[in-house]
Amino acid sequence: MSSKKQISKKERKKSPGRPKKYDIDTEEIVKLSSFGCTNTEMASFFGCSPDLLEKSYSDYIVKGKDQGKIRLRKLQWNSAEKGNVVMLIWLGKQYLGQSDKQEVTHTDLPEGFNVELI
Image 1 (cartoon, rainbow, N blue to C red):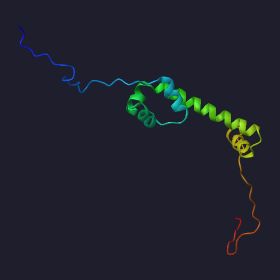
Image 2 (spheres, rainbow, N blue to C red; image 1 turned 90 degrees about the horizontal axis):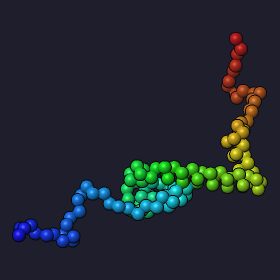
Image 3 (cartoon, rainbow, N blue to C red; image 1 turned 90 degrees about the vertical axis):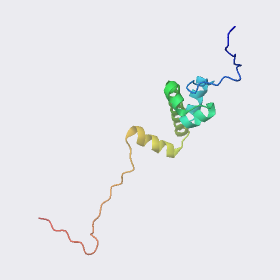
Image 4 (cartoon, rainbow, N blue to C red; image 1 turned 180 degrees about the horizontal axis):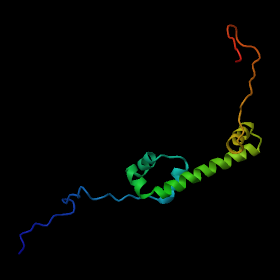
């Protein structure tokens, strides 16, 4: 007969180095990151560390952030097409190189200033 005592599952301690298993839905990562959620916020949502998301799910995070930017640009263009003057000005500055530069000319010098040409 063996002298080893059998240990029940409850009595066994988990190995400290053993990784936890998380139920992380990649579609949910894409969705949350498209709304602009930070890695810390998403990690809190899934109950894991931000490092885990950055290491294992970075492609999904990038995809979601890109989708969010595309959605925002679409809304901006739609707003401009509806006549939103502020959005038209902003898009003109971003894409057409337009600016609010004002040409200022002064004809009189302030009192006490003197300019001599050499």
